[in-house]
Structure formats: C-alpha cells, structure tokens
Image (cartoon, rainbow, N blue to C red; front, side):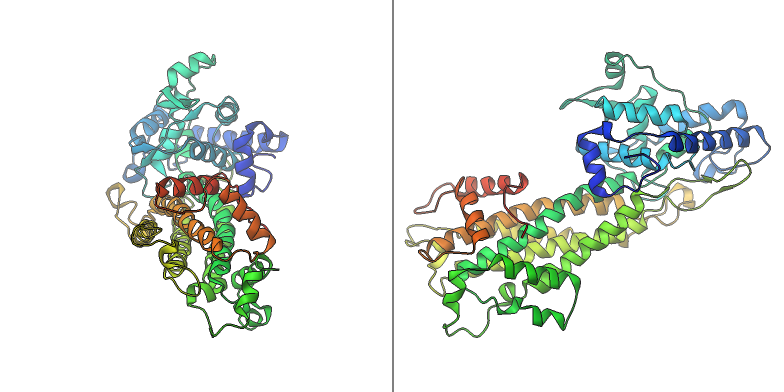
Length: 496
C-alpha cells in the first residue's frame, strides 16, 4: 500500500497497524510531498500573507510573522496546543492516528516536509508510538490537542509507548539513535490540523461494530431457538416489499442461521400466533443498525482518503483557507452509529427477559429449582444497567457547540466526544450480548434432545467450552466475563 496514492479502506489501516512495513512512500508520493514543500518555501520568500505560514494562528491570524521567526512559530504551536487531559487512548488508536495523518500529508497539499513524514513512518515501523490523552478536542480546527500530543515526539518532547510501558520520548529516541527534528514553515500547522483523532475512533469502532452486528444476529437466532419462536418473519417475500438493505441482509442471515432447526419445527403446530417484537422484528431493528454501520463506513473511508488540514497549498501562488478540518462530517454519522449500536443492546435485553419469564416450556429464571436458587435473575439487572448507560451515551455530542479561539472558531463539532462515546457503547454491548448468549445457551439445555441448526450448535459448543450449564447457583459473574472474552477474542462463528 502506498501512502498518499492508494485509496485506503478502514481494513487497510488496521492491517498497517499490525504490520507497518507494508505501507510505503513511492516516487509519486515523494514528488507530491516535495512539490508541496517547495510551494511553501516560495510563499515564505514572497510577499504573500498566508495563514499559518507567516501569520499567527486562530484569532492571531492578522499578526504577521517574519521569515526568521517561522520555525519558532511552528514549535510554539505544537507545545502550546499539547494540552489534552484524561487517560491515554489505546496504543492502537495512536497508531491509527499516525497512519491516517501520514496518508493525508502524503497527498501533497499540506506543505509538510518529506523528512517529517518519513520520521513518522519510521516511528510506526520501530513501534515508537506517541501517548495521546483522550480529552481536549472540540473537533474543529481539527483535533488540535490530541494531534499536538501525537507529534510532540517529533520534537523530542512528550511521551511514547515502549511495549506496554510509557516512557519519556527523549529516552526512546536515545535508545533508537534518533535526534529530534526541527519544523519548517507550515509544518506544525499541517501536523495538528486535521480530524485524525475522530477518524481513529471511527475506524476502531467500525472494526468492533462489524463483528457485533453479525454476532447480534447469531445471538438472536440462538435465543429464538431456545424460545422456540417462529422463523416466518424472516421470509424473503416479506422483506422484498419493504426493501431496506439492512433488513434484507439480516432476514437472509436469520434464515441461514436457523436452517435445519428441530426447535423451530416444534413451533409449527403450537397455539402461538406471533412472537413478541424482540424476536419477530430482528431484521427491522438489526437491519436499521446495519444501515447506520454502512453510512459510517462510507463517511469514514471518505475522510481517511481526504486532506483535512488548513490552509491547503495548491501552488506557490495559490493557497486556500477553508474548513476541511471541521469534524461535523464525521460527528453526525458517529452519533448515528452510537444510537444504532445501543439499539442492538436494547433489543438484546428484551430477548433475554423473554427467556426468563418461564413460558413455553422454559422454567422461570432458567433454573429448575428457583426459590432456593436465584438462577439467572440478576445478570438481567446487569444488562439493564448497561442498556440504560448506553441510552445516556446516545445524546449526540454534535448537537452542541461552544465557540473557541476568541470566537474565530465559533462553531465546532465535538466529534471527538462522538467517537469516544461510540466506542464506550460498543464496549457495553459486548457484555449485554454476553448475557443473552448465556441465557440462550441455558434455554437450549431444556430443549434437548432437539437439535439446533448446525451453526447454532457450533456456537453453543464454543460457549460451553468455557461456561457449563447452570445447575445450582454459582459465581455466574465469572461466566459472563468468560463469554465476553469469547466475544472480544472473536471465537464465535458469525459468518453464514
């Protein structure tokens, strides 16, 4: 893969994270970078007044900076903007930020030197990954504070990850026999303008969301088997007359997931007319969440292959001060996806509750000796708490804007908060689905000797490899965590 030339997918970025050496700069990319660098040099030597090259920043944009002061201007920009707070983001998120930043800078519209870009690539290859605090970006004028922390190590400042430990950058550079760099005109601004913090959270969230969407279908199918519900609501004919792509995909998956089930055959002659919505409307609800996933994926991959700093240098005589750094284009789909992920948990909890009611041949609380034993009463409390927590996280961060930079940046996206909340909701969703899987597997124990579909039996065996059937009360909190581990390790079979 070639930085600045190839079109990257979000999967490409995740692969580069695992093996940074597979992404390179070729001659075309280097020529783009060098041409942009030369354009900036000519601007500095001319009488043009260009924002961020020979002016101050933000509300100081009308303050002219001499050619002799441009290097100090860029240094001051980085150190003054590195004001993030909170815990460090995951090391992988920092890597994604670096990859996305290198890709954008390599397109040759930012004026950042080849030396700086090659140093960032070298840092990725040597696993020198900057420590970036999680809070402090308003998501317009770029993710200024997080990106300033991301590039501090270029100057020999800040902290980096050394394995799983955090060390001072100076110590790491000495270890790798590297010297700090000096930034030229426009370089500091090119490095910290952009949406790479928001984008990194979108990419990481998309990876998890993609798997959880598939797992949610599997979980629903296992619950339907345990409930001995009806597969009629998944028939193709029903979804062809309301042809949303997400609904059609989920309905088709449910048909395949339930193929050959003996449990559903037992439903054919029962007195039930139709199942509750959480069983019957899986295609519509899960499908709506899939539509949101597709929207976020499309927007994130457009952003990934874009130039998002300011100003954009087109030539030695033309630069444009615009708003490509504004995070609204990512904030809105991230907020939408957060709601979509939360809804997967919302409907999952309702299916879990149905399995506890003690209807249609299942014992109350999924235990044969309730009273003496609480059975699975309390895990549903945990799921309910997580579902409500997710609902509180669904307030759209993009609905708010607080003016910054003395009013120069008078509308901001808060997209960094959107990205962080999206990943929080996905983390909670893992545990909500773990509860449902635990209940569904227990429910299937009471349907034996009837067999499930092949894929549901396979997933049942995977779950039972770590969590046994509940006979009497035990520490089932550990069971929930074991199932969550299976989810995070992607052990469940979700493709059909």
